[in-house]
Image (tube, rainbow, N blue to C red; front, side, top):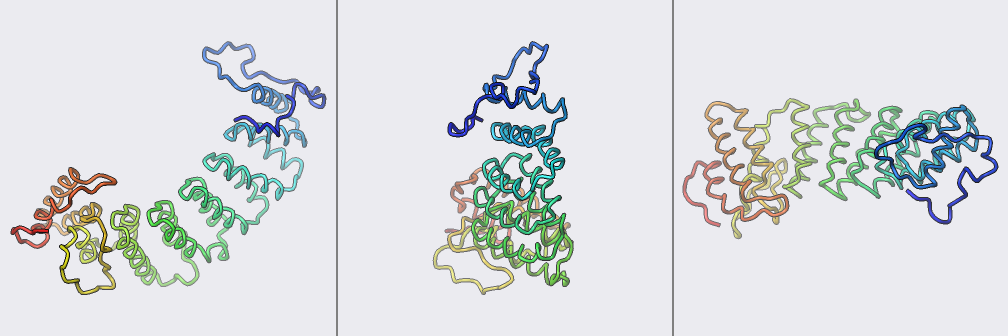
Length: 347
């Protein structure tokens, strides 16, 4: 990565203050078959970096040199590691370093070295409070960035402060309100609710499970073909050892085509919200769920599970990730499977 023109400076080999350092070429006494064509600026800086590493120098100018290299190549883990050692040796103000990281993390969100360096700094400052706001701002740039979510989970788990955890569910709801299909947000919610201990106010685990089931059902009703929500539902059931069969009343309407226009509305069941009016049905995830229900029931339901497997196969020929074809072509199969009525069901 080239430095912006306004930040370009003379090469280190041209600076008199660096005349005491002996630069080391990367391929000293080596003739590589396929050399990497670095820019002159990057080759010059890394040559001097190897020189100061060999001498063991740790000084303010080393911080300037490593920042230069990192701005050109944020994945240079040796520069990051030596920079951290130099910061510790000089007892440099780490708040200043964190401000620099604010800039670099946003610019290089997908570079794990940036986040690892920040983690090391916060371990020293012992001040995780501002980090959650910083992470929230970072997620506005990329709402599904693995490194950002991983860092948030580390902050919460490492410091394990009730004040940090206190608004996490609210944060999750706001993220899912913005994008109900954000798999990273669903994963983080599961981490917060089920994999990080019991928080104050959540001691009644049965009530927590009821809350989470109601939450995910409502989101499935909004967007039935959202794999992330169905995965969360399965995760809750698996974690709490609740049988899939207990969700059959909720899942069944999602595994069938939309009823014809003019069909009288069904009785509202608050624990089993129906698909939204414009939903594209049948939903593949719901059909899979029904197959698992029948398989778990065993006996005669194994035949149903096999039939549902056939339905999934047929659906696969008509449904794609973005286009759901004509689901009414499957209506006879689906209707017969779940009602036992082999008669035709016309749209």
